[in-house]
Length: 260
Image (cartoon, rainbow, N blue to C red):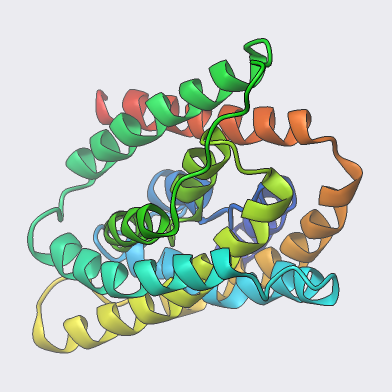
């Protein structure tokens, strides 16, 4: 890795984390196109590199949430319980079933565009007399398991998927964001370890790009803390719209890239 590539990764991680941390997204999902198209990380190595970014960057925002007493919640425990086994399954699927970058981008687009548009629509729609019912604890854990598999395949930890779904089902962003980031961090540690083990038995670009992942993660570490500091200063509606716009934009970006 050259110094210019490392600086680009550090800057990208910092800027992305500042924008995404307030809504419970680590930023790794937006770092993917930067790694694939700008930094030239090969597939499937881009997935564990993204997970490594989450491992390094995660403590920045989590430290801020911990100081505010927001991490010790039942929602956090349910999300971590579901996503941890899912991310290991997703890592195996990513290496042996979905190695191609084109199929990878199409899957991301098909997943995030509908989620983002759905959340924007629910936010802009006039408030109904009765609020949307929150999902049951069992449903949350089951959803976290599925998202853990998705996160293991995409290298995004799952927060960018769990956030829009849970907020769209009626949960406030202030409650979802810390839990989603905590589950992203836990699953990223497990996912990065799974890819490292798979790289010992498989061939090709499976292991993470350690130097680039660390450079991006250091930027995300600072940016995540700053972004978490911004969350209490932003109204709920603005946070929900930001989360929906981020998901829709990323899905559209991947759809365009996959058609090239």
